[in-house]
Length: 117
Image (cartoon, rainbow, N blue to C red; front, side, top):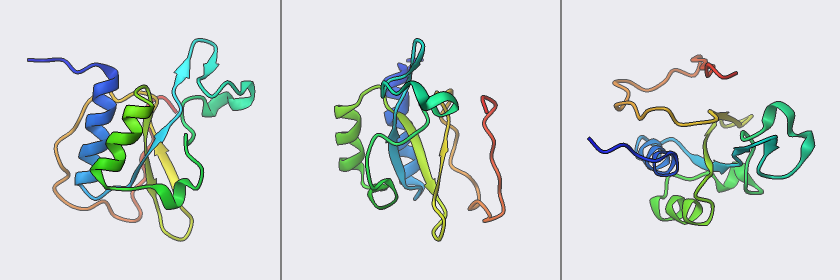
């Protein structure tokens, strides 16, 4: 069994999420001592905030755009843009596994909290 690198796993996960109809965006990634964006004020958002401006409108399920983002930023984390009237980002600092497709759509009341906070 081939083990994907973290970089490949993030791209694969983004493409899979997009195939499920979930809009994705690239996020900054954590580095030793903080966030790759270089802003020391990131704090708990280190590696969990958008790399792109206008992320609400830029979020996509379009594979060519997703591939171009990860070609430009191969270390990017994956963000899922959720909601319509008040969009938010669901982010995990590291893609640990790619899960099978959900058997039913997520309900609007579903809440997910990654173990990392």
